[in-house]
Image (cartoon, rainbow, N blue to C red; front, top):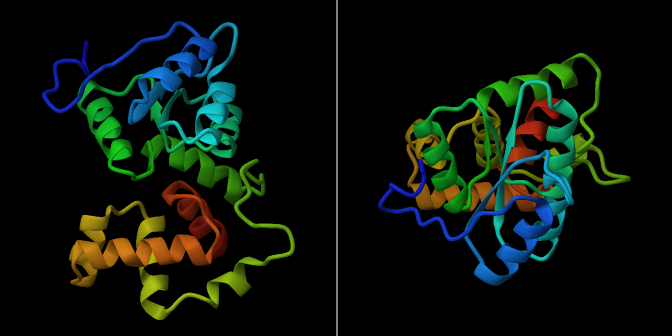
Length: 201
C-alpha cells in the first residue's frame, strides 16, 4: 500500500516466501526486491543470495535490532541495503528509490550496530579483505582525492553531499567512488562503509 501510491514506484509482484520471490523475480525482473528475512520454504537470506548471484535485481533487506547475524549474512549474500521493519513510510520509499538508483543503504541504527561490533573486536562475517591482501596495501593505491571520497562515503554521505563538501560535480564524485570500489575490491558502498570503519577509524 505504501509503495503503490508513489507515482514513480510500481509494485509488480508479491510473494509469501523466498522460493516464490525468486520465481517472481526471474519472470518479472524488478529493479528492487524488498526482502523479509524470516519466511517459510526459503528464507530471505538464501533468496537474496540467489537473486544477486543471477544478477536479477538489487535487494533491500528488512531487519530488526536483534538480527545482527542476519545483517552479516545478508551482507555476504550481496544485499544492497538494510532497513528496519519499524521504519516510517517516507524512509521506506526513500530507501527503495536509493537502492533503485544503484546506491547502497544502511539504516543508521544498523550501521551503528555493525560499527560497535567491529570496535569491540567482533569481526563482521562479511569481511571485505581478500585473502592475502592487507587494508594498508590497498589504501596505498588510492589517490589523495579518492581517499577523501572514501572517508566521506564511510561517513554515510551521498554523492550529492560529497560533491558539495569537496566542491566537485556529482559525475566526478561518481567516478571517484567507482575507482575507490574497484581499487579496494569492494562490491558497493555498504562494503566501503565497513572498510572505512575497519581501516581508517
